[in-house]
Length: 381
Image (tube, rainbow, N blue to C red):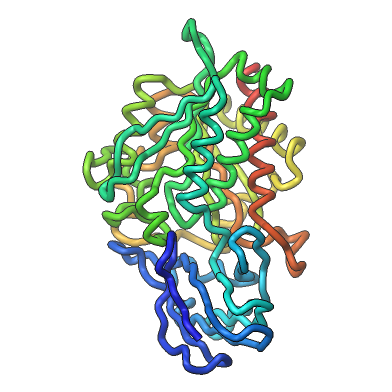
């Protein structure tokens, strides 16, 4: 039996792997921060025998309550993913599973690899209306890629900005971005209508260093990027710095920051700003999104769950020094536009919980495709 993490986004610490019925593991901290939540590892073992895996420090993780009613993701080929029986018991995460093959991957959620990101670049830039360029490079020399979709010869089209995966472990955000990009490029009547009025600027992965390292919430310098927007350092939080510069050049008329939530088992959306016009625009956007996607809802959000989960932090870089340290607050203040936070769940939705769900990331791809409906309605208001 062997457990390995020497691959893109791999992360786990082996405590004891001598007994298949008592494999003991620990979730590792982000490379330069105290956050710990993400895991992704490969088990090489004997097929068709039961294994019991104990993640013994789950109760000490940053979002430990997120393990309640949660099921681990697994795959034999990194293409088809499914959930396996998991119980959060006594501050430990217990996985009991008899793999059908001798090699199997386990992960917190379906990974989105650097290789798939490159494939998305290659396929997307084949379209005449899509231009992919690098805004700059991270501390580990990874490219910060921007997908510009649409042509704006007279400069009068609305500028729609979408960023995803500021927190690298929230991989559902990049699956959403992939769905949105593919829908915009599918030549459908609705996509064509939308691109007649808008041009899109999409950053599918704001945190490529953290993604490769297997971090959950921070970049390679230990920075939570969504607490750096008030004054991003050109070196330590260069990802935010370069995106801000591009936004200043293009302008922003609508902004969506895409994330994943560990605890609330629903997709939901919230807006920066408390004006009546913002609330009206948010409600309209959510209503249209709910009609377009069966995986989006407007009943549950942070406000309805705040008494249950309270305030959480992932370390010193999580606490903002300014009102505008978060992306949505910064963009709303500086660009005077509707600025939206989209959260999607690590857990299965309540109406499917307990079912053996295959490829749970597919619903987020479909949500990305469906997002053009509320976006079109908003820019036409």
